[in-house]
Structure formats: C-alpha cells, structure tokens
Length: 219
Image (cartoon, rainbow, N blue to C red; front, side, top):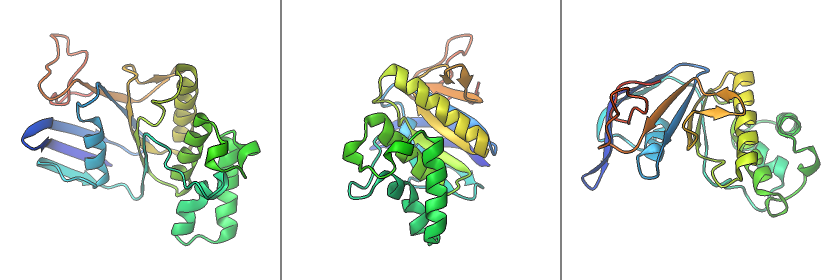
C-alpha cells in the first residue's frame, strides 16, 4: 500500500504539487494525467523515495518497486534478453533463473524473434517492451511508469497500454502510470482510478470532472 497525505512540493519556491492525498492498494492501477510541467514526474519521484516532499507524509508499504522511464534506457552492449535479466543478475539470481524469467517475459511481450538482438537493432516499440520486461522481471509489487509510451505513434501506444494493463492484472502489480490519455483507457481497458490535473493553481469546474493535484478527490 502507498499512502500520501497532504503532499506538496516546490522547486525554488515555485509550487508544482499541493496537498496531494492518495491511497494505492495492492493490485490497483492509478493513472496520473495532465499537461507538461504540472508535477506528474515529481509525484512519481516522491512515490519512489528518490525525492522528499516539501510538506506532507508518504508511507510506502510495498515490498519491491520498479521504475519505467520515458526512454527505455537499455544497456547498448547487452541483448534484449540480457537487458531483461539485468535486474535479476544484479540481485544475485542464478543464471538458470535469469534465463527462465527472461525467456518467459520475452515470449509474453512478443519478442521471441528479437531475444538476441541489441537495442540498436530494435524498433522503438520493441525497446519499450524490453524496458517493461526488465522492470517486471524482478517481481515488483509496485510499478512506476513515467509515460514510457509517449514517443510511440497512437496505434502502437494503445497496443502497449493494453499489454501493460494485461500484464499488471496477470501479476497483480499495483501501478502509478503517467499518461496523457485523460480517460486512463487502453483499447477498452482502463486504470482503476485517475488523478487529473493541470498544475497547482488550476481549480476544477463545478462538476469537478478533472480534479487537479491539489484536489483531495480521486475518480
């Protein structure tokens, strides 16, 4: 479980987050939507522990966390399967386990013909699949995703979001997912909840349909 209460953050006196309250239960998916500069990445960094909030309380009870960035950030000298297995190797997993887990993910991610290819030989969508596989390989119970499919064309982005939500459901992994898809949808599937905002000084309309970060409501 991840709990944030009254979380605010500012850079050089400029507020980017104000009074965030959220609660993420095991297995839930929360989509964070909003325009550039409204604090979405800052919220992920606070959730991960990489950044301390200016004000408020954060409690992370999840056992293991993985982070997927906007860019794949693959190791160029390692093949697709070696990149997927990298986290397991760093954790000291036996080579046989590394190969078993990586092979299963390669199959599930539709990368069977690319297992031995290097990043420069892969398309953008394939590189993002490898990055997603690397994150899932370590068995996280919380996955943070900073709009990893934003650079893909709309059709491929929808396919990747659908695959992501399927994988999260299969593995019962909770996720905070930054996206520009205001409905939190992916090919008919959707996140459990969405936190929408346009910066700390934007207030919702009367209906509160697009609650900003400072609003205490999640929909």
